[in-house]
Structure formats: C-alpha cells, structure tokens
Length: 123
Image 1: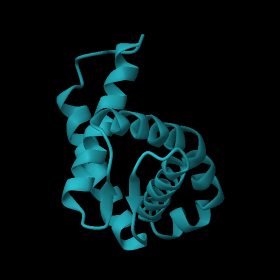
Image 2 (image 1 turned 120 degrees about the horizontal axis):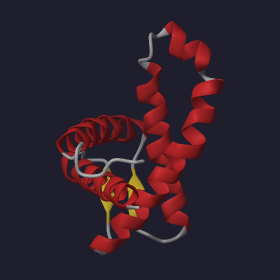
Image 3 (image 1 turned 90 degrees about the horizontal axis):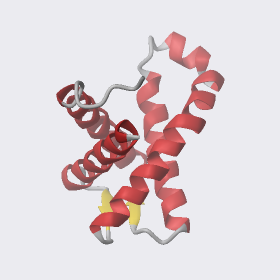
Image 4 (image 1 turned 120 degrees about the vertical axis):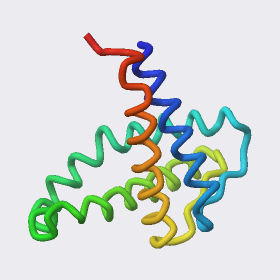
C-alpha cells in the first residue's frame, strides 16, 4: 500500500514540476486536486499506454523506441482531457506543450523513483 501512495505522490510532484517548467501546461486548482490528477495519470499510463504501445509497435521499432515520447505526450493530453471532464483545472495547450511536459515528467519521475528506491519494496 505504501508503494502505491508513493507512486501517486511521485506522479503528482512530476506533474507539478512540468506545470511549473513548461509554458503550455496549466493547473488552476487546489493542491490536493493534483493528487487526483496523478491518480488519473497513473490509470492512463497503466491501462491505456500499453495498448497504445501495442498498436504503435511498428513505429516504436522503426524509431528505436523514440516514438514512446510521442505516446507519452498523448497520455498527458488524455489525462488533461479526462481531468477537464471532472473540472479539475489541468490544461494542456497543444501537442508541443504535451511533448515537453511528458519529457519533464519522465525525467522528474525517473529521478524521484531513483531517490526513493529503497523506501517501499513490493512483496
């Protein structure tokens, strides 16, 4: 259970960093709404992203995996679209902002997972 909560917090911090660093990402809400957006982002990445990777497998092979960045940008846009449906105040203005935001989220997420690697181990 602790690992699940830690992943949500890491996603929320990564999303907040992307909103702060990328101009086309906007968040207009209370801090706890970012945690709910992180849950949506985790859901999208857990269930929809693998399907997208399977459907885009030829592009992934052709680009040696770099097309994953495009898929990540679409997952961020999908998260913004879903959160907009729940009136959470998270907006992505265009594909370029989504691409840059997905890149920032990936880097921050990787660094935070590395920093917290020994905190909770799934058994």
